[in-house]
Image (cartoon, rainbow, N blue to C red; front, top):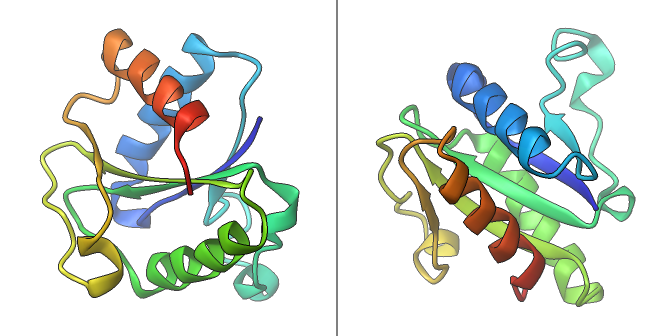
Length: 134
């Protein structure tokens, strides 16, 4: 499963821990980061993401909240999910974060991950991702 993990750069430490935990739990998951930490400073880094390359989007809201870029990616991913019912969307509250207040986020059930390295939580997250209806 190809997963795009969309995060706030201010919470990169938390996102990297989540990505590592996902890999340790399920090495067959192919997790990419947005923004890509290696190209985030390049001029072409603002290109739109082709969600057809992915099977799922994990939107991570950490202690620093969501960025405008994350909100735009969420909106684009929702359009992709409307076109392809197999495309998965899963918003994740990581660390000690609170749910965002935007209308697009109030109607969604958030997966709560207070400790992103907890093995049981990661297993639950993978199960939720595999079962999540977009």
